[in-house]
Image: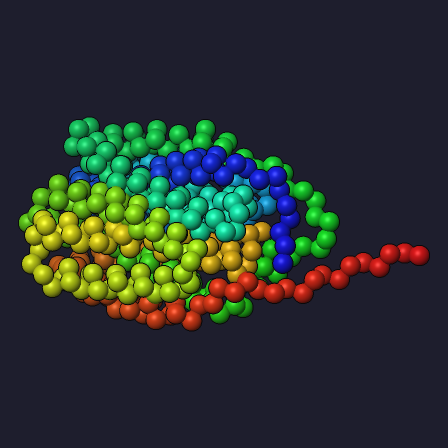
Length: 408
């Protein structure tokens, strides 16, 4: 199997610009849980209203990711990233001025979700896959994911300080300016035009049929569903969960920052291990450990230090699923349609994100507690650990396309 050649970009350039883009795009969104209480209290909304908007955000992110990825695969990532940056800034500004739940859902949900599909992993990993040698690909993806984690560590205290210093609305306006910084960074990922193929190439439709007919692809989607459910539920609802139990907002801010800091280590380690350890075993181990860590967190007394230890350990497992999952897609199916196929697997992640954040708000409003959702995350972790074991990372063997007969 072969992919049409492009003149590759410098690996250093790709990693630097890609990492900074992901640092901004992921760093901004990781702090959204800090807005739950100030927004709902100021607007007089229920937690489910806020949670539904973030759920729509995750669903819109997932539904538009395959399309953003397909455009980036075909025409390059530059304009996808620029449009995503502009949508991100617009969504953040409109999020600050939305006066109704429906308007908030359109800005915080639809616009920002679409923006994230064009500024995060699917698009950036496509550029990495096409420009980094196969033996370094998993490591490079780990570096980029670690940058996204550092963005969480960096941005959560910044966002908390902005909310405290200038109010939650003005804080969103500042973040809109940060999102615009993605535009100049996008030019570092501008690829040379795709050369005309000299042999018959696999079509986009054929690539989709091949992927969805492959057992491992469907198992990766199912595992990513669990990942989305767990991390978005925790990221959005944990600050309110801690406040409900009498802990100060500083504890939640520190916990989210610790998740980001330790995820730098976890994602880098997962990407590096992917070069020497079967990636399905890495994924299975991550999900199993998440189930154990959450169980221990729920059973021990809740104190600031138990929260910090949970955040640190959970942080090493947070986005560490991203490098091995995307490296598996590239290894099995090649890099020609990596952004698009990565976008479809990520769609499974976002269905889980939608359910996790919405169900957290819904069950809290029904029961006055997050306990049931916490235990659902444990059960899903066990499920994901089991279904990743049968994933096989062997590359697909495709028959060579027949060549046209040469006229006499």
